[in-house]
Image (cartoon, rainbow over all chains, first blue to last red; front, top):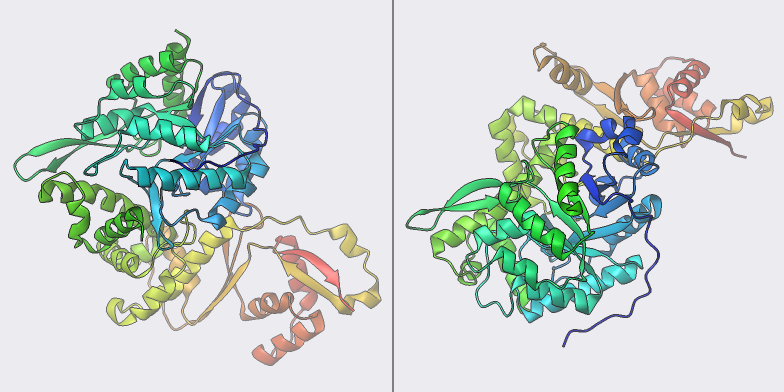
Length: 295
Length: 256
């Protein structure tokens, strides 16, 4: 049986009035700061990668503080390595706590992945086996993170390029159990479901969406991916890579329609992390997402 | 040791050394396919590390060429692990790493160029400071002047090099390294972000000694130090005025 932790959570920052937001990256920072009022009529909120704002000062954090005056902000981390058997890096969490105090975000999230072993960080979102032992590790770490921050966190379903032998449950079951045992919520990345389902034959995207507990989804992500190939010893196989460098593809929009019904009214984000287009392209994607959410 | 810890150690070992068969045995694929799938993660991990180094050490990369820089990164990655969930400090040991490789790259000034670029990177992330309080400063009683001590803006870093490190850096950034620069010249450099944007200044030896001693010594003792090292007298008031107006000096206190 999973160990559970009792929690008293602090109040989150103000929630957005519009449900769709956009991931804010350095390349668009000046544009967003200069046009904040105008952009606030089109999108409801912004999400940033927490680790980009752990500096003690300087233009990045000062710009974010300024933008926060107009937009609700979600802090999305990539470095807490919550699935690591070595436990949680408290020094890293302290930096996040400090940023939370400055920004007062309405959501705080990280990933269902690991990335640290023997105090050495790999700074990537590495895959977990879906076993009871892995579930216990991540439940303990998520609980520790929530206790430390004194707030609920969201964890994002991963995009995976491999599966492990002998899983004891599927990913949706793993997530349901993690949320139940730790009290955390799910950041449902619809593109990740599609990427993982294409890369792993046992994974059915639609079934996955229906298996998830309806009460746990508190945010959704939409993004693009890229296509590659691997050689399995006999032939080439298609593999999708979660690069966040393109428009959301048709198949992901289709899955999003199901997700929008299953988890109606959930805050949804357009993510773009490489080969950046003009900010207007992100706004167009946000508009599409909003239309589906409202249909 | 837990099974998860073992699995994660084997995974990491494979990413670094490409030799651990235990992780391949944990995957439901042919060896070839398992290697290819693991390789996606390896490319992500080391791609991230290399892109951090590449963005900090832009001039080092220009000086040694893209291909050799990548080799240097690969060697660095094997020797220096990331110690944090963010990569702001990942390049900290890179100048020292280049120092140790002096015989290989044959560019004696390369570690100092890397040091300068690292300071540029560090200055960007430093704390902010309030603007120098000129009104309060103008009210100081004459008898307290000899007891004044000053503080540099938190983003200030000083560097002395036996090479013309500033000239090399500037020529590469501005002209792609076309100028012929004589290496027989020491240079003194100040890196700072007092006004939001990181700036690098080429200092005179006198200015360097002045700033290097500012937080530790009183003005008269700094004057004596400059005289001792340069064998020349200097105008301390003019130096003070210059660096206050540039925002490099951000605060002061009167010490008994």
